[in-house]
Image: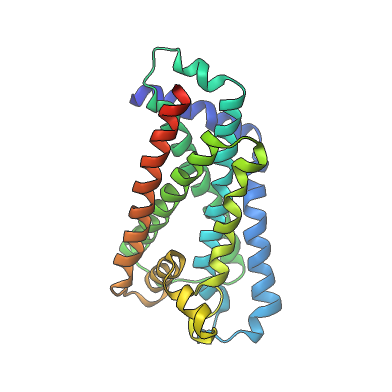
Length: 249
């Protein structure tokens, strides 16, 4: 399966590299949001930090990933509707390789986009005192988050009836960080909104990444963040696997 997945992964990555505007397009929205909030709204937002871009970046990275996984749905939907998926299934390859190739492509392309956003943040003044272990932990959390959302993306990619339907699911995911601690502390929110913000997955993930990057210590919230990522990934994987089997007939 490894060789099959590698060949299919290479096909998808070559398509992306032939049109790098995909990565650039995904990066534009979070970069524009970062510029807007730092240079327009940042002076009026109290976060208890001297550098607002440091506070903002973890949430922007999650928005970047949520934007990127929409292309996973689109690529998978295109393969299904064009008949390419059916053709792959008649070939002597492990059938699950097709799905894993799309998942790994999402992982790699999103990693590249995240790097682009971090480089822009560095130009804007982002600085971190995290050590290597902290950075590796951040990479692990963002990797799990990417895989969780990617397996969610596989579901509409396999089941949607239109291109719009395949990508529409990503919009709530992009909006979710706005009702979290990504942009402002939850303490400033009305009671009902605060209750939602503090008990949805983005807040625990953002808080954990922020703590690792700037505080050097992270509390029990990291286990909540990991539980959200793993839980979403496992449930989405099971549903996606069933949808793939139905697709195969």
